[in-house]
Length: 343
Image (tube, rainbow, N blue to C red):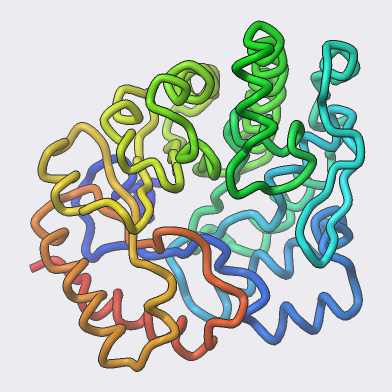
């Protein structure tokens, strides 16, 4: 896989130009995806390998990005642990949120090929379609983020219930995190065995934690996942939204790439860490609502200082928003390819 610029950059190697892919690059901003959603629910798309493969391939066919990312959802393995998952207009819902020891003890550590075989089948189908043109990224949620959904029952702007749980039921919280961690390790290893050529771990909600709680309830479990992966020649990316303040702690993990949101000064971070790790990010996706001259300015301002360094992957600071104009996304990809050529 070293011929792919995405993999080369993830391992800190020099490439011909800066590679680019986007979080949520296959989704609601594409009319082709919207047409598929008129036929299938979101969860059905995730669980039907042929359809999930088609969605995964959309950005490759329409945008010519440098990597594909599996179309799925971070909550799929949590449903397999024993949670009742539903996707509504307001987002995911678990109707049996974790509240006590009995709830934790009911959770199983599932075997991926038995409980979520459709994920691995999708990976195998996508690789047949990709024909080694670009690599495929698999992914999972980080243990703390997954636990927060299990406890809150849905996304939460403040994690009030989760914070109360980890402070009042500290030992039980660690027991639950251990189960989620073992589930995540099995899940990512199964993706790798099925053909994922890189993996990304999403810690969406860790930025809401205090510094000490981040170290206790998030960081150590991320590291346990990374060190348990069968990832020789498979780069591991960590993305932690809202936790640019924690990046020095994330650097201590064994991950290969640190993906930061738009709150961080990416060039400063890269200058500080040098060749220790590659970095990924971090354009504010809201820029993509702007005129093209504005998009050009922000992309150039981000890329130019990063061209001094090896080991940089262009991405957004979070996922594409559903009503961003498709033509602006396509313009962004073409612009990065134009401006990102190394001299």
